[in-house]
Amino acid sequence: VQLQASGGGLVQPGGYLRLSCAASGFTLDYHDIGWFREAPGKERGSVSCISSRHGSTYYVDPVKGRFTISRDNAKNTVYLQMTNLKPEDTAVYYCATVSAVAGTDCNPWKGAYDYWGQGTLVTVSS
Image (cartoon, rainbow, N blue to C red; front, side, top):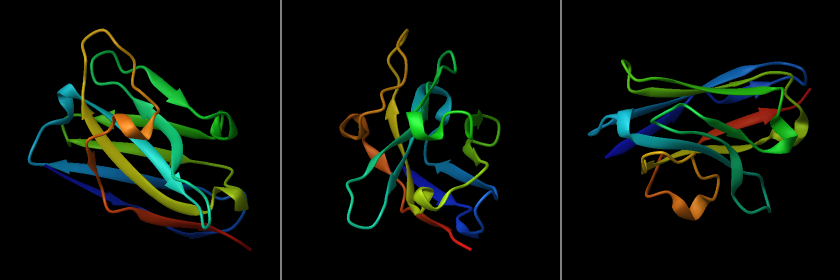
């Protein structure tokens, strides 16, 4: 099981990025995916997640209306579209996965996830 996060970079405030989380060694069809971020000096926290079965989503309040999570099961990839980026979005972003439980929404708690990608750095600065 492997997750590869990519798409980070340096962007100016108000800009956008799309992060990708590509899975290998398993199919995403039956897995929930979460995005988390860790800013310097802060704990890793939830950003968003998407369930496998019915595609329900969750967003932490600071990113609502600016970030969109989506999945392409054919490409075995989950995306995090980030718009109107702010300096406080600067962090290392990680994707993680856990086997889905039928009939439930994704869990935003980092402790629920089994496998983690290596992280991709997003820097928002002018």
